[in-house]
Image (cartoon, rainbow, N blue to C red):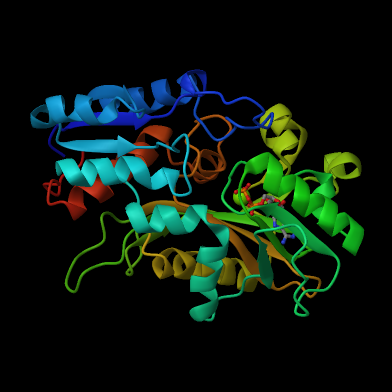
Length: 355
Ligand SMILES: Nc1ncnc2c1ncn2[C@@H]1O[C@H](COP(=O)(O)OP(=O)(O)O)[C@@H](O)[C@H]1O
Ligand SMILES: [Mg+2]
């Protein structure tokens, strides 16, 4: 692939603006310098010239100045504020006519708003738990929902607002939890059927192929997708305190305390079904290049889509997507450069050769 000038756009934890009274996990979704450094090195190893930039309020004038010197942006910006904050940098890039990796404005907005994504999947006949969005703590509970339930902030990631008390057994707990979520996270609360079964996450690379278009390389299937081995999140080592939930505490304080089983030991039919659903969930929201789809099984062992991550974590050591790639034997450099190539190809910037 020809050498590209790549603007690497990120929001680092250390640069996060802070507001008074914010929850302790406010900056949990943002990236570490280690991740930014690893991405830069991977892109450079792919033969590209990298311009690293913080995706903050100064990004627009900076890109306006540099746009003649940038071929494409590698975007991992989670955003700092606003309902559709993951869409803000893509919107700036589109205004300036700069190509960029991964999903576009609408898919990031849908992915961040878990209820909107669920509405799209339900209308496509895809399995996801029954739910209700609470704008206020005292709204009557829908008769379609029965305890136990599960509550989370409508538009967060990295299990923000999720601990063992997210499992709700009765009306009193429901009111207390919803009221806390709404006030602590300043957004509606999503309440859905509690799924007691095993938890899996499925990572994928690719895009639907245009008629006559060949897959990017031999690892992509005839539909244009590469599915990583299914990863099972086994939280049983901390079952007592975390109650089987992949909580914010596990993700941020003790990621090594649980088991990341990859490939998951599951029946071939379940594996096929999880992979089929992951691609269907991705296509339904018009995601691009890369995503990770989270699932849990119900009491009968049937998979339900929890959410899609259109900006999956890219920390080479601890991010789920990188664990999956490693389990398959795909080097981090290849993972990063495949995402770049998939995007470059969509914009006609790819010459069909590999670095
Ligand atoms: N309906 C549910 N039933 C049981 N556990 C759930 C449910 N929804 C979420 N969880 C648990 O909470 C974790 C985080 O939820 P998820 O929807 O993936 O949000 P996030 O964007 O924070 O990762 C999941 O990994 C899972 O352990
Ligand atoms: Mg998740």
